[in-house]
Length: 65
Image (tube, rainbow, N blue to C red; front, side, top):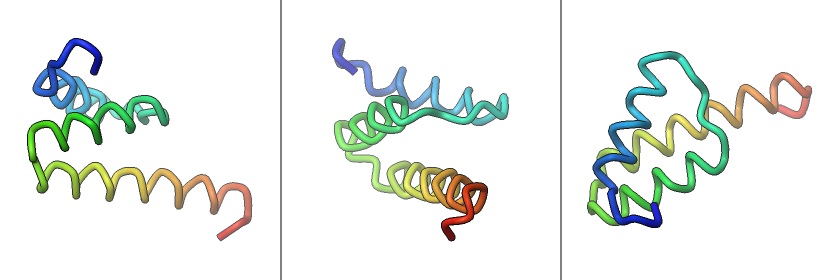
């Protein structure tokens, strides 16, 4: 989010989710920064839940969970 467009970051994140594309760690980091910049607690919780789900799925895949 170097150019200070948190709204655009959030819009692109929502688009990724609608298209079923799993965000990578860089995407999650930028989205979390955007949520903080916008003071968007609800969106931040949604992102946290999405991240937890991705991490949980990976851990299950690798037999860690």
